[in-house]
Image (cartoon, rainbow, N blue to C red):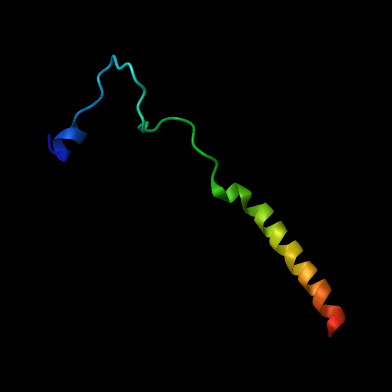
Length: 58
């Protein structure tokens, strides 16, 4: 069976095994943008610590 023939076929209605790669419609993973505020807070803290170390040396 060639690739185009394989992908044209659909799963039968009475399957006994779940799909290994579901075709969508399920819950989505949270976007990486939801973690962005924590990343910026960590970056700002690192910058503040670096400035606190460098300023007394000047």
